[in-house]
Length: 131
Image 1 (spheres, rainbow, N blue to C red):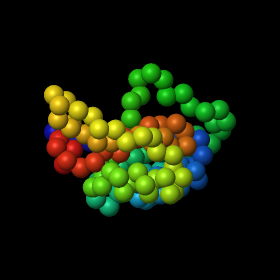
Image 2: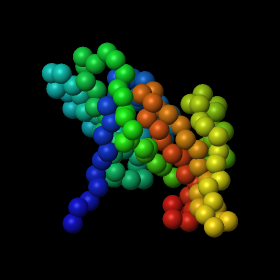
Image 3: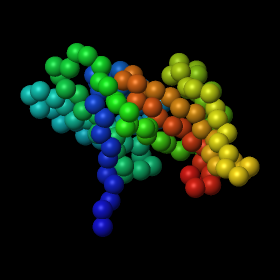
């Protein structure tokens, strides 16, 4: 049986990325492995063993292009309104809150935010299939 363990993204500025993920989602460094040309930084939230792996290529100068295949990461929060307000206070530039409906019923309440490299993260209020 396969067990998901992490998702990896490439980032240019380690310090900016670590600051963003710590302030936005309380992700902390679980491990940091440094090689001659790059570093792998594994971030984890205390509530989950799943990790976000940040790959920092030391010689990278230009922004990464995520292409048209990348969608987003997603996290679940208890109170979407409170989190949106906190993101605004932290100047993390959250997008507008959305009420996504299916057959007239709310499927999800969410907003998107982008990290320093432009990766989108969906912040979903806990409930329904996202409980």
